Each structure stands twice: as C-alpha cells, then as structure tokens.
Image 1 (cartoon, rainbow over the protein chains, first blue to last red):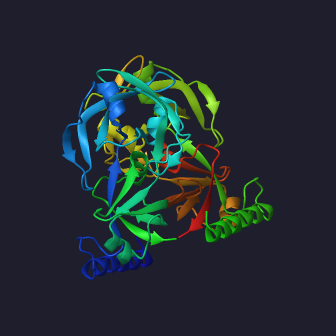
Image 2 (cartoon, helix red, strand yellow; image 1 turned 135 degrees about the vertical axis):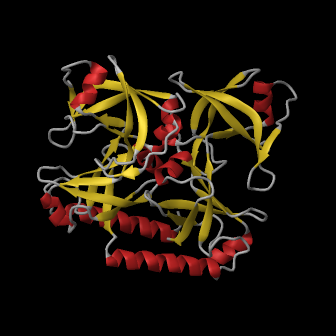
Image 3 (cartoon, chains in turn green, blue; image 1 turned 45 degrees about the horizontal axis):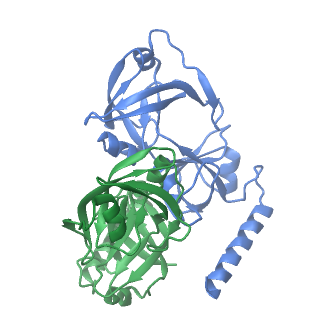
Amino acid sequence: MNQTELIKKITSEVMKELDNKHSCSSSSFGSNTIPVGVSVRHIHISQQDLEIMFGKGYQLTKRNELTQPGEFAANEVVVLVGPRLRSITNVRILGPLRSRTQVELALTDAIILGLRPPVRKSGDLDGSESLTLVGPKGSLTLKEGVIRANRHIHMGPEDARRFGVKNDQIVSVEVDGDKALIFKNVQVRVCQGWKLEMHLDTDDANAAGINCGAEGRLIKE
Amino acid sequence: MNQTELIKKITSEVMKELDNKHSCSSSSFGSNTIPVGVSVRHIHISQQDLEIMFGKGYQLTKRNELTQPGEFAANEVVVLVGPRLRSITNVRILGPLRSRTQVELALTDAIILGLRPPVRKSGDLDGSESLTLVGPKGSLTLKEGVIRANRHIHMGPEDARRFGVKNDQIVSVEVDGDKALIFKNVQVRVCQGWKLEMHLDTDDANAAGINCGAEGRLIKE
C-alpha cells in the first residue's frame, strides 16, 4: 500500500466509525448501512399445490423463523426437475402460504436445470419460466412461476425516512472486500413492521464473496 | 418507466451510441468498452503433475484456441475432490504448461468442494487452498494452488494508452442490464500482443446475468 492508498484507507475507516457513532438508527448499523441476507433457491407455495405434492389437507410445519415477522422456513422440501431432466433436490418451502406458487432461483441454479427465468419482483409471475416440482405424494408442472428475484431491500417506514427513500425506489448498494461490488437496480420495499435487510441471491452473494450478516452501503442513484 | 427515468435511459443510450461512433479504438468496441470473457473453473498444470495424472511423457492436446495468443483449452479434463469427499468432474486443463499447477474456482464451486480459496492474482499461490486432482492414470494432492482468480483485464500497450491506465492499476467496470453491477477491484494486466478482454468467474458473470461477448465500461477509480 502506498501513502496515498494508506491515507485513503484510514480516512475511509475513520468515516465509517464516525458514521456508526452518529447513527440515528434504532438498529446497531450505521446511517447508510444495510444488513445483507442471502436467499438460497426456495419456493413459496399455494395450499392447492402443497396438497398436490404432500397430500390432501397437508399443513406446512415451521423449521425456523426468518428475519421478516411471520415468515418462516418450513421443514418441507421438494425436488425441481427441469426440461433437460436434470434435478435439484432439497429445495426448501418458505411460509406462510401464498395465492400462487413461486420458485426463486439464482442463474447458476437455472443453468443446471436448463432454464432462463426472468429477473422479476416477487409476485410478478406472468410469462415467467415453467418447471416441474416433485413432493412425496405427487408432482405438478408449473406453466409459469419461476423467476430470478430482483435485488431488494426490506425496510419499515422509519428506515425509509432515515434513508430518504420511497417504496419501489431503485437504489445501489456497495459492498467492500476483495471482490467489492456496487449492486445496481436494487428495489426499495417499504412495509410497516419490516426489518431492514437487503436480499441477494447466491450468485450475487458469491460474486461479492459475502454471507448473511455482511453489510452494504446504500447509494441513491 | 416515468418521464425522468425515460429521459435518463434515452440520454444513456445516445451517449453510448456517440461513444461507439467516435471510438478511436482499432477494435469494434467503444472507447471505454471492454469485451467480457467468462472463465469457467479450470486448471493450469505443470508437466510433472500432468505426467502423474496422465502417464509418463504425456503431452496436452489442443481442443480449441482461446482469445489470448498461444493459450488453448485442452481435450484433457480432471476430477477435483475436496476435503468433504465431494467432487466436481470434467474440469478442463488450459495450456500451455506452467511451472506450477493452479486451480481456478468460483466461490460456488469452492463451497461445493468445501474450500475457501483466497482471491489472488494468477501465479500468486503461496498459502492458497489444498485439493486432490484425479486423472485417468493417477492422482495428486496439491498442498496449495487453489485460488479464486481476481477480476482482471488483459490488454496490449496500445489499449493501455487509449484508456490511460498502467499495468497492475485497479479499475472498476460497469455492466448494464436487469442485474447491472459495477465490478470493483479489477486489475489491469498489460502485455504486448494481448487482446482486450476482461476475465470474470462464473459467479460474477451469473450475478450480472451476462455471458461471453457481453460488454463492460471501464471506470477509473
């Protein structure tokens, strides 16, 4: 490291510390800092599709709670089978139930299965990819419902005010490290009760070399 | 898209077109545009290690040439076996031979094998990860040599002058699309005869949703 780099590094560290110190956040994070959650491939499911794969009247059972209130990882997993007859096993169902079944994959998963799902907001499924799901009591082929989830940040109204951002606003988020990146096209999602957390898929997380618990910095575009 | 976004988008498209038009590059790319090459997991090998896995006196055979003059993908592939006894098959050897064997993985590959290789420049192998390699005639366990290759751009001296960058300089590269990103920590590597190309691993490429033949824009830091 030469002197200029050293000065830059020290300045950046001092600014980061000051940031943390003067934060008005109720969380322990700095004023423009966002905790990162990594979403491994998973599915959200309707009661009807759950019953096709797990049996009539079947109910999801809770394995562990997730960061957002009411959301949980279920004990139930399914097998995904793509059009090239390659499969991915042990794909977890997240609860609670939804009105439509939705499969969220990273591009690496999709390449294994032979799919090219579009990048979409959660719930925006029209014209997305098709896929076969297999459970212990039956299988079904979704005509559509397979997406790559867009990068997004969950936050409550107080955090939105603090950052000066609105629901659906597009921002960037920078992460540091050997494989530092600035993620663009990150959607802000504001809802009462939500905890501050950026959701990235496993490709984004592995490209940046980060895990759950990493931190990013919000940058307004 | 609202009016502001539309104006921004049109401006960006016009600027891109102007950029391409006024390029003084000898290549067909715009003045700050870099073609992208995606490096799938692969190995470089020493003659000694080649002979352990393929037999005494064995010589690599050429499958296809790569972008940089003299470099080629060989017909020969090996199996990688990690400490958790999980394997990745069909990992291609790239030629020509090197003085030390080097395995280049994306983090997704490394997680499958149960490794956490450091991000390194090519050839900087001291203290990197260990791994077992298996060929048709034998196997060997590397004490070190497994890395995640750093992001880098190959270029000749003329391109370096055109961009105003030097060998080993660190720059950023922006790519567009649904999963737009700015890759930071990108090393410039200048060598007489090299063709302009940024090398990314499959995690970086899949995070950005791009393939070989995509384009990025160089940004000086």
